[in-house]
Image (cartoon, rainbow, N blue to C red; front, side, top):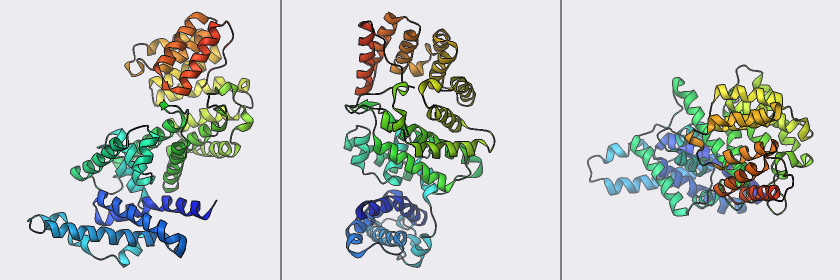
Length: 423
């Protein structure tokens, strides 16, 4: 790793800690974030020549605090004629930075920042955007590019989220004990959404966006560091590692999708698999498992199979039964149908899909057609299978998935055997 890359990595690691320190002391989330961005820019300019300071977090907090107090003083001057100025800008906010910033450098407020960015008062899309901006350190342009959205649209989304925080007076603190589990679930859901969008992009020319998967793993590691005893945090990190370990084998040189059963398993990341298996094994031994831990256990069974035909499908089916009880949703039922087909035959899997026909959450979704096509193909019903592959291809907005589904339909039309389905 080059010195520049190491410095960039350090700045991204420290950014949420610095922002958390400022928000805890001064409030003003939006102004604090602007000040932190200025401090990061100053570090990028000065550190290459002057060297990284002995206490880089303290350095960033002091610089950001000076920027923020300057801005608060200017705002106070503009608002001084208004009777409520003192209430909006408490005297503590105008104290010059000094020893307090040094003490703040010893406290890591990253977890509080996660809870703030993922507050239930914000919409899910705002939670994702704000987390990537404030904690991930991604620029608005980078976030917009990752989600194939106009930069102006993403900027408005982030701005509205900040305004919502200010208008509702969301406190910057760890949630109360009775709220903690529910609030943590929201944080983990946001990280899961970021990872999923990176691993299988919902639209666009690329199957995966490695910048998003890497960022989701990095942020989940941060939460795991702060909450090492939370089983679901460890489970989510394990799930990400075990899933991302297959990434090198998921696409061909031209970007085409390679289904799980056809992947070259020698290309899978064995170090990531070992870490993921270790995490899920350790966390499952603690007691009752949560949904992310169960999903990680399923992923581990796939990754530990030396060949596709060695996959322990009965155990995977049993785990999907557990997952169905813990977190019932149509996607779980869809995956469970595939596992059932692998254990009891395609007819059983097709019967399991019947319950999803009336579920509005999957209405028009390409995955339902794709799974039905795969199971029909397994049953030897190539005509109906081809029709459902074609329907799935029309409905997906992912270019690699569309090409893959069209190729399967074309192969059936030509009378050949199509390749195995992805998981």
